[in-house]
Image 1 (cartoon, rainbow, N blue to C red):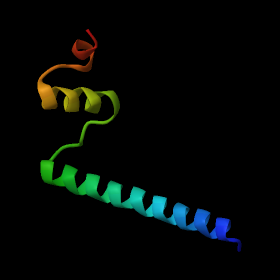
Image 2 (cartoon, rainbow, N blue to C red; image 1 turned 180 degrees about the horizontal axis):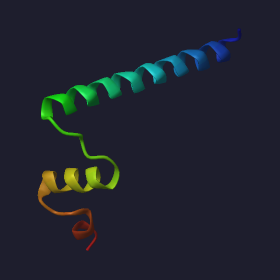
Image 3 (tube, rainbow, N blue to C red; image 1 turned 30 degrees about the vertical axis):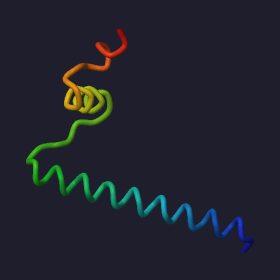
Image 4 (cartoon, rainbow, N blue to C red; image 1 turned 60 degrees about the vertical axis):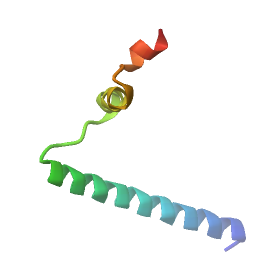
Length: 61
């Protein structure tokens, strides 16, 4: 296996581990919270409002 092949394999393993870790953390947080975390556009809206009270649309003006 070449160095480039080893690097790609290591990167793939790292990415897989990161995804598993993130999913486990999300599941743990949802269990503690007692409900699912918001996903996608709902999450962007929620995070934006929590930081400064304005929605993303309000910030564009």
